[in-house]
Image 1 (cartoon, rainbow, N blue to C red):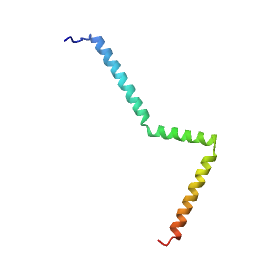
Image 2 (tube, rainbow, N blue to C red):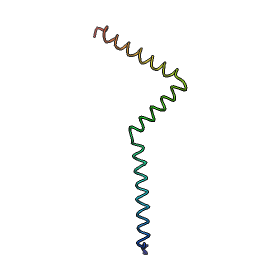
Image 3 (cartoon, one colour):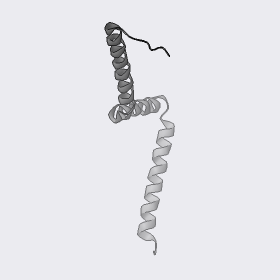
Image 4 (cartoon, rainbow, N blue to C red):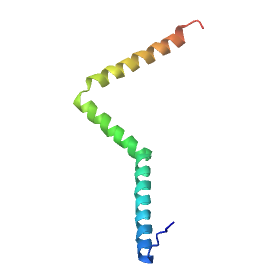
Amino acid sequence: MSTTQLTPDAAKRAAARARDELASALDSIEDRLDVRKRASELQHRAAAAYRRNPVPWIVAGAAVAVTAVGLIAWAIFSDD
């Protein structure tokens, strides 16, 4: 069985390359798990979607308002 021996310079380059790859992977993971960044992106996408076509947003808002008013009225006027 043969083993590959690295020169000290080659070992240093391999270690540096491995550190760079690890740093890149950790940066990528951190970027994906950054809640503030994700929330900001979601806010920008929602604002752009509203600017393109506000009708679904208005309909959804009205539906939520009607549901909320209905639930409040039911809670107030029900005999339970």
